[in-house]
Amino acid sequence: MNIYHDSRHDDAARRSQLYDGSVYVYSPTPATLKFCEFTRELVEEAFRPHDPRKVQNDIPVEKCVEILSTLKPHFIHHRRSKELIQDILLERGCDLEKTYFDVPRLRTAFPADYLSSGIAYAFHPHRDTWYSAPFSQINWWMPVYGVCPENIMAFHPRHWTEPVKNSSSDYNYYEWNRTSRLNAAQNVKEDKRIQPKAQVPVEMEPQFRIVTEAGGMMLFSAAHLHSTVPNTSGLTRYSIDFRTVHLDDVWQKCGAPNIDSACTGTTMKDYLRGTDFTHLPDDAVALYFDGTESEFTASPSSVQTART
Ligand SMILES: [Fe+2]
Image (cartoon, rainbow, N blue to C red; front, side, top):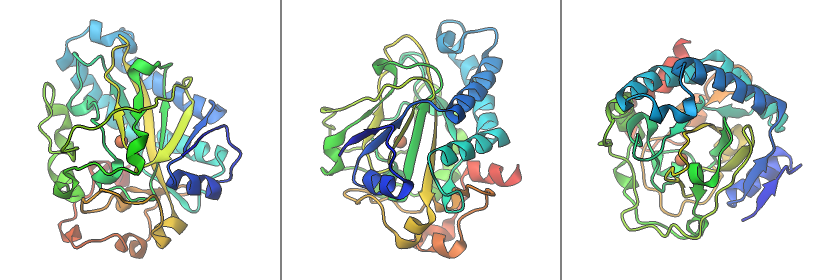
């Protein structure tokens, strides 16, 4: 497992390394900085006249949730967000014909005693593959403002090869779409949504945190165990993340090893082609069906994507 900084690896070599647990970190680029600038404009407009990084000092949490409930979907489904992802993928040497991405998420990590559930969920240690992501999924993550070790995310590298007893077998992606995600804004004080979690105390150490400038980008496998760091910095963290899969790897069903994920359903219908935002071919998606797809419910994000 290595950390590559500003690597010149091509996309195929990078994917191969990512599937082995390596993490790639890139300095800010024109496209990532543009995305940060666009996001900051939306965030600052939404919270005006307050400083978005200190908003926890200025407004009641209920008001904050109300603002986020409008801001986050607006960001996710904004056409400009998708166009900026295209630019980032091109800068990073991805083939847009074969690279599919899902809509970007805007994450907020408030100081923990203010808001850490529902729409600003502070993620416990998890793998995205516990949430029905395919093993070829790559996560892209970048901060929108400057960050410090006390308000970012952490990797727990020993669990790349060490399984964690978890409840992912109770998780079905379609069921989750049907019941939980639409209700995220209602979970203000406490999160009642059933999420796949470790069923034993997780060894959080050793851990590493990668601190970049705003617009610095981190790529890592969806199979990595990672968590939200309890925010003790006094400043709210705003970050963007999105996920990609490569068509060749989807067809070949290759990716990181599965050591402990047992969820059902698949997120394959969420990804959009880099060129024209169309979905993956039906027969490629069908390779990931497990019998629960008769209950299929599209994610709220992909439904809204199709409409805009
Ligand atoms: Fe995650």
